[in-house]
Image 1 (cartoon, helix red, strand yellow):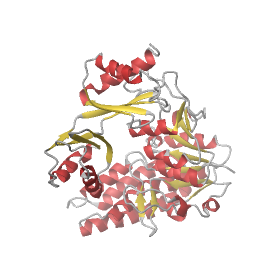
Image 2 (tube, rainbow, N blue to C red):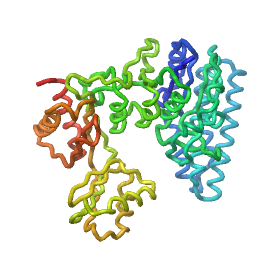
Image 3 (cartoon, rainbow, N blue to C red):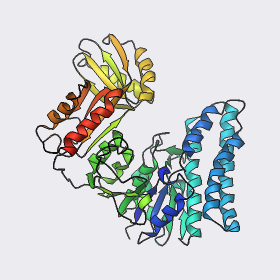
Image 4 (tube, one colour):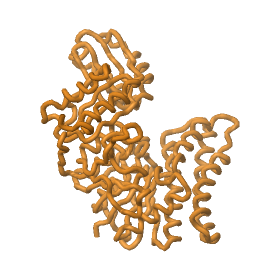
Length: 459
């Protein structure tokens, strides 16, 4: 039996009453699904805050953990009226809370936070959620059982903070752990190394957890429940004329996620391509309709005007390395990227010319990268500059490189508003073109490009 793997994220767990919407959604499935669940909304950020401030003398670990567990218990109180039934679930939550307290007290005692402990501690939001959801589903007559990643085991490459699943090692016998007549609830966000140390998949990594399980179980679909109407032609909070996108290819979805569309984690597509497992996006606020709003698969569905969406991200900065011939001198880029990798700085893109290497990074890494490269004393580099306060706009659609005139329409639309484009990348991806501009010009540029392709298509 091919099962559906279903992911419920933090956006589905904002209010105590949200659990009833999840129950409605789960009841819509013909066969018991495998559910991957995230932490309650905001919990991971709270745990990060505890770790950050734990070395301050006034920080009480027990009070901090108690504040978190109270949120879960309040959800239980809202959704389970039977005091005795509720007490069993609270007991399990408190056992996990005690473990979390011990780990936090450990890093408070040694006055540092090793990577392996940080990952273990940050996994507890999901661990609380899985026992909570399992209990509430059972109370509502939906036979459910919890399966932890370490019980599967969901093996990873062992990289702390940004691990990848080792599919070959995780595959043997996995289907036997998931009884077909039971809803299986798995906490997302983490797997385990070959030494059984917890390794996180990065922020938003529960999407990747769900995709990995879908591949390992050869699932029928991966269903991701959000609180919005799927992928749109732009951010509907900014562009009131944004249209719903019915179908996307894996490549299109990955590019949209990478450049800021917060519907799906960029890595969620990665495990599913070879297995050709479709991803369906649902809106939890329309759970009773059980209607997939966007479907992502391997089939190319060219929009009549090629462009399917205009998205943007403000989480970018540019490190500019300047010098005569710096772009073609052998070894410069390799030395810089190797050192940045050693410092755990992720390079998001590179654009080069004869006299400059432009390295696109997450905004939070820009200063660290500047300091790192400045200390290298490479003779070929005469000047190093930081450029912050920028946005990246991406236009996405299969066939973007094949249809003449697309680039001209994009940049003519921006030019109509006298907006300066600082950098352009066209051809780096088969399905997207992106460019950099000042952050204050971003909304106007997105709006104008969206109008060009969606309000006046074909003109």
